[in-house]
Image (cartoon, rainbow, N blue to C red; front, top):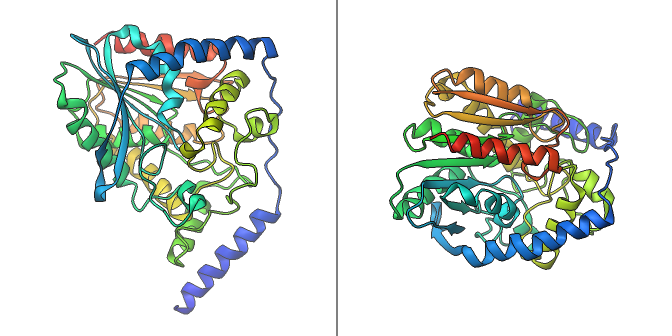
Length: 374
């Protein structure tokens, strides 16, 4: 290693130590739904939402980049109004979107949702052991984008559709943005839920974007791309749907009933776990590096100006995962989009589509209104 490289590596190591031993992020305390409300929602979810998802969905796999098997579900409607593609966020699975799919069923759209490589039922990228399989790792963020395009070409468009729409969250929102930039005529309208246009590193402590990227680059350069980023090591207890502390630490949703009932499903299906929900564990150095670079690319004036598709974007004012500044830069640079509307939920965490009823009801109604206009 050259002397300059040694100094850079030493600096990164020192910074990492300071972060891990410095001021830890304090998680806000959240109010829980009553036991009665949780029980009522659990009955609804188990008796209506999941039966619809499991009975109406057709499940399969397609071959993604480098022969990785990518899992998907489709809910096709005869003589429908078009196709809706859903791209999920980091550490998620298509089951997390069961309620969203259920609530959008009256739009008359055939719904298609895939699970990104390394997630859910899709092939895992690291296969040394179960812990490695759960780690969030990607060789190149472009693989997510190419997988999504293959999905569109081979699964979605295997059936002709007059209209094509997309609903994408967080990491999926960045993938969707890059699809809109690279294939401007692929979709008639797009809904982006807290799209990842700026990475907020809030765990173990808050780190600004440029510093976080520099640290990830150094560790990848040292051959540690597959290692955990900062203190993202897997905890002893991976998931506990009854633990309020885990609910608060994930910083994803303020809806206790949705969080706990969904995680009850995941507890019964631990093979679906990929990394840790939220910002608390499971992310590798190379994923962090690739995520930073993907945000810089997607929000840039050069790329965003290629978008011509109408966009509706949901922002969460209390988002600990992705930054609204990056989203606003993206919007400002998307100067050729046919329209670009933003709805801000000041009190929402990252997942507005999984939030408390008052917030989530608006997400559903505005999504229906927006997509129904085309």
